[in-house]
Length: 128
Length: 128
Image 1 (cartoon, rainbow over the protein chains, first blue to last red):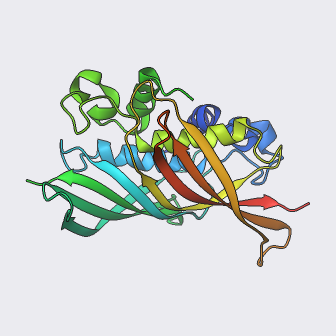
Image 2 (cartoon, rainbow over the protein chains, first blue to last red):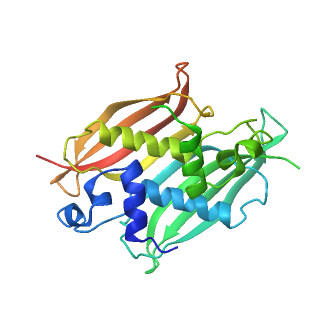
């Protein structure tokens, strides 16, 4: 996905209204010297990428939690990010055998191949 | 903050387009029997609450990471959430003494006082 300046400002204005995410001119004087995406925006885009890619088909995934989320590099306007998702654990829920717990490791990279964000997810899905 | 159905659908449509977040009728047949907010939406609203409340004044906060994020209860249309944030650690950065690291524990509660989300944040701020 290309992260445009408009996307950055739209998310920033609504959910993380710091000047570095909402105003290119003010961002030039900010910690990164330019507009950068809210880290939460990058997180939200990884969710969209997962759902749009088909994820687990029409099976609803209920998010249980996130661990070790790290924002490693800033994402600037025009950066192209790719989301890599690997299933690292899959087990039946002990408390509710009608459900399974899926854990995934997510790594987001920019066009230079640098990791910009990583996290571990835990989600609940119905079993077959 | 009151989380409205419109808010839930706006965020869901853009960032987490699963039927339980985007379509009240389909959500009625989904895992919660009604429209519920994306967990990432609740996370984004806690960021906005922090920035709008003044946070650390005009000091920019650069998010470094999140740990132990847990979505504990669903948030439904019309729920009123309150964000509680406590500074749990404050220290000078070892690698960059011009910056400090602030860690906070965030708890989001609904109108019944039930915790719906909790997380630990780590952020970087410039020192005085």
